Image (cartoon, rainbow, N blue to C red; front, side, top):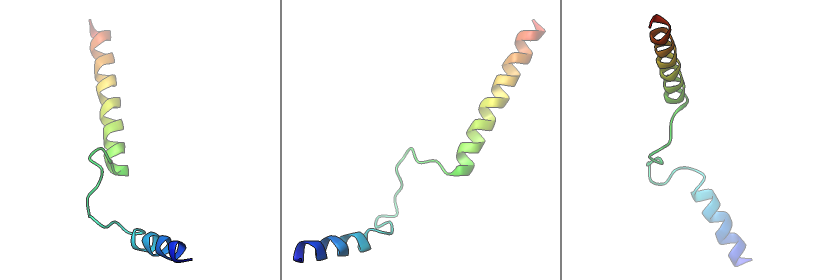
Length: 53
């Protein structure tokens, strides 16, 4: 029972972020949306340039 008690305490402690750091590749929803929109703009621009030639 001692082991399970310590596991439960560990889970409770680590339910919230302990370091305040994020994974360097972590993207917020807004950052993902901005990246998707930028890629779409770039594709549309490339398509317009290829049609113009």
